[in-house]
Image 1 (tube, rainbow, N blue to C red):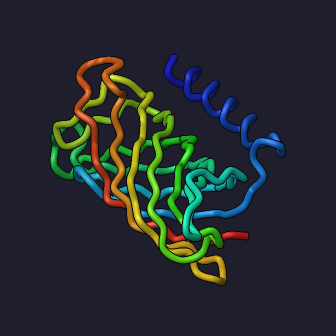
Image 2 (tube, one colour):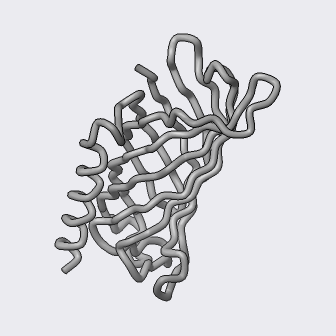
Length: 180
C-alpha cells in the first residue's frame, strides 16, 4: 500500500513538473541537511513565478515552485545507536521570496510543501505515523549576478496532526543552486 501511494504521488509530481506551462525550469539546486541524527542530500529543480506582490522601493514578494528528490540517512534507527535507516523523499513546495526587483542580492524566503517518504521515518526516538509529511522552511540567501544561489534555511517536517504520533523533525539546510 505504501509503495502504491508513493508511486501515485511521484506520478502526480512528475505530471505537474512536465507541463511546460506550469513548470518551466529556471534553476537547479543541491542541498545538504542535518538534524535529529539524520543526514539528508537533496536535489531540486525550480520554476519561478511571474507574479510580484507588495512592490515597494525596488523590492517585492515573488516566488517559485521547488520540486525535490532527497535521500535521508538516519544513524539511530528505532533508537539503536549506529543502526541506519535510509529513505527517499519526493516533494513539491511553493516558496515565497522577499527579494530585489532584479532578483539578485540578499533575500528571505518561506515555504510549505508536500512530501512523500518511501517508508515511515523511525530514528532517534522519533517515529512518524505516516509517509506523507508537510515540509515547511524559512531561510535567507544571496543570489549573485552570475546566477549562483547560496542559502541557509531551517526546515521542519511533520504530518500536521493528520495522525499521531506526530513528533516532527528539524533540519539545518545549506543550499547551493544555479539560475539558468
